[in-house]
Amino acid sequence: MAEEKKDLRIRKTQRELAAALLTLLEKISFGNITVNDIFTQAMVSRSAFYAHFDDKYALLRMCADGLMQQLFGGVKESGTPLRWQDVLEKVKENVKIFRNLMLADQDVEVMELTRASFHRGFEALLATHPKMQDGLPGLAEVVSVY
Image (cartoon, rainbow, N blue to C red):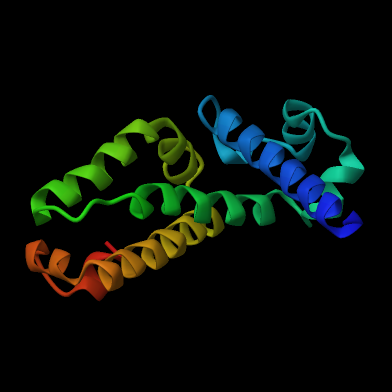
């Protein structure tokens, strides 16, 4: 029973830190966000942040995977063009976050981390919905990278 409560507290703290990072990314680039900004926005202590993450890049990895789950996880079984439209609409909803991740600082590590998360999400989507490959302009392995 005590283990369940601990797991819930850990998940809650991680969720709060992730939400804080995403909120900050809607306003400023990742390079301009400090760990102090993140734990202040999340209303947790510095030690709580470091108990869960080594640095802001570790938190970003978790957030990027969550964003990709959002993008690709809820795609419906409908006609191929509509499914791609669903993904693109979700990108559009989060355009400020993606812009502040990919374009603002052009941090190679952040860009690679985001690209790798996108690639994993894209591959998982195609594994779940193989017919979606029909609407692609090339091989799925190539399209997901570019």
